[in-house]
Image (cartoon, rainbow, N blue to C red; front, side):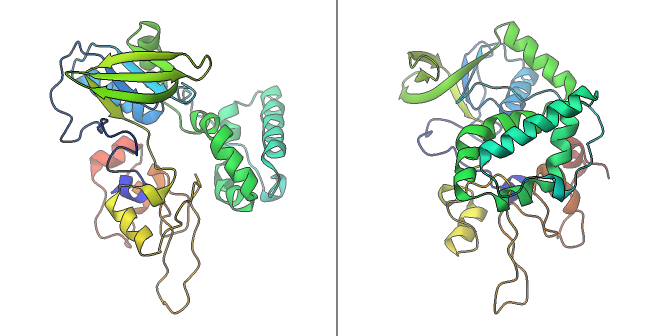
Amino acid sequence: MTRSLAGHDEEPGAGQGHAIRMGSEADSALDPEARVLVLGSGLSMVDAFLSLEQRSHRGEIVAVSRRGLLPSPHRKGNPIKLDVADIPLGTQLSYFVGWFRDLIRENQKAGIDWRDVVDGLRPFNQKIWQNWPSSAKRRFVEHTKAWWDIHRHRMAPQVYTRVTEAVQAGRIRLVAGRVVGIAAGDEFSVQVQSRHTQRLETFDVARIYDCTGIARDISTTSNSVVRSLVDRGLGPAGSAAPWPRRDRQLRGHRQRRYRIGQDPRGRTADARHLLRDRRHSGYSRPVCKVEQAAAGVGC
């Protein structure tokens, strides 16, 4: 349910017809020594790595993403207090990024961790996105989102240690680039173009996992629930917004309707909010204990 609300695809994205989702029916038993390739290097890739570890998989894991970046480690802290008046709304992206970097530097000089600055901005994410001009939104998605994601969506410290040790030991290989071709045979021959050198490298792998996460353009999603809403005109087709927007009450309708990815209270729909608020009386069923534990949400 969380995956549907958040806009995750049920099937691999376009051009990734050979990739499967971790834990899907197609994810059958695998030779523990086999090399696998993962599309994406974010938290979904980390989940895939932990799942493979649990299965006693020992083969190399090649993680391919545009920048080859791992999520940062989390650390418990105290988010800084910001007021909406402190934030430069409606500016171009370059100005906003400069302001945010200066804010982090100023706080670090005072002994405050950068995570507390990132988390202090969280309540205003939605308003920031809504006030940006189209050009700033486009540049954010194309150039800045990957850097934001690795600082905003972080790994637990113990998981970060396991992942970085696996990288250093050669269990995980991070590749900054893009898949340009896949040939299927007894194995998959995957051709990857390096982001930095444009050099082509071929990886022979037994399986390809799609860990690219939330769909950027929901008009092309394979998620059946989201797809039906888009087809009925109830979703913002083509939206690349990382922070969903809330619809105002539609004319001629008493009941409010909400954009995909938004919870009934109008808050940003990350996994924690979705799991918390699904216990609200407005939802038809409670969240199970396993889901709450996985998201770090208390009962």
